[in-house]
Image 1 (tube, rainbow, N blue to C red):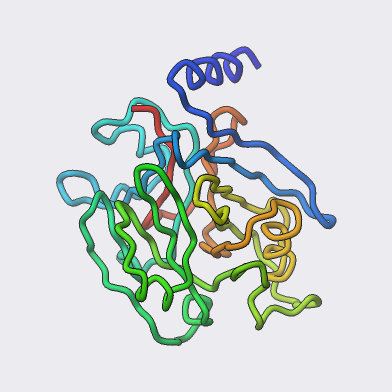
Image 2 (image 1 turned 135 degrees about the vertical axis):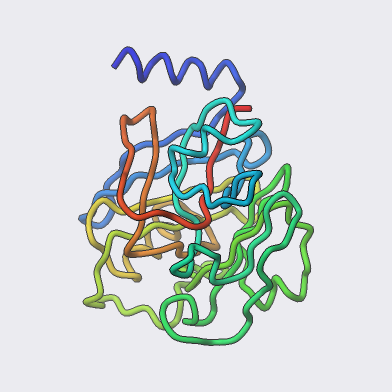
Length: 239
């Protein structure tokens, strides 16, 4: 407990407002991490300066310019070589183009979307709208499906859907100042997961990250999920 308090005081002293906590919604447990996109240092991570795959949430702390990690989670689907399946931009450099068409699996269950980060905002944007708007994202990762689109659940979600997994994703406020990352601690279906963002967290747009390799690193909660080597990751860091 003293270590948790010390970590919280350290982050508070560095001006980091992000906070992770456990909540219950609709009979399931979730861990959510709230981010002030105007103030917190929110970034995507995939490769180290030498071009190697970083691969694990805890290894983000070893990257240049990172003093400590407030929280981190996987942030988008990836191939066997851990290359992003969809659009990916990190620190202004695009390494994978936008994939606009339907396809197999959850990623291709349109509409899908892009999580776009700037120095002062974070937005979940449906993919075709993203192409139309062409926002100047410092970091961006494409995933799918969208969970919530302008306040509506994805049209393919079924309330009694039987596909249940540990799932993670992100939702954002309309003005882009608030981002909430969530991971279920119980297996849930898409409908329930989408409702978490819309009905409990009050977020009009939300994006699914994954449902088989979902992982969270939250030191203040004493949580460090291990397992799969990861592709794209998102974190709030203290510089």
